[in-house]
Length: 104
Image 1 (cartoon, rainbow, N blue to C red):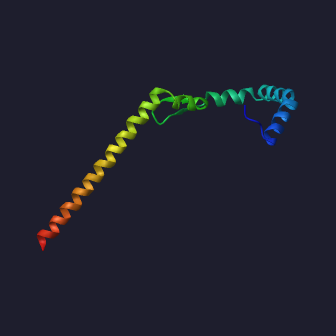
Image 2 (image 1 turned 60 degrees about the vertical axis):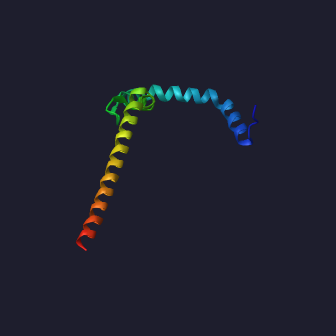
Image 3 (image 1 turned 30 degrees about the vertical axis):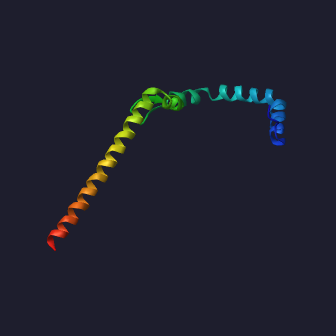
């Protein structure tokens, strides 16, 4: 088991000493701000994959297979478009070179 640094030991000690007070303060905060907390949890946003999810669940959603599949599919399509553009640029350059040779 790895040994704790001095800073980590101090944090652990402080946490253990103040644990009950921190829990009490957290409970009071949630009681006072219950309505605003619930409103924030209800806030829905649209993900880049088109799904509508609650804001506080977006990180879970991004780990789901539906989102991963969408992102993979669209990054592949973007890569294909890039290679197509590069091929078109190459063809245009070659065409210009041929025109220059023919004009001389």
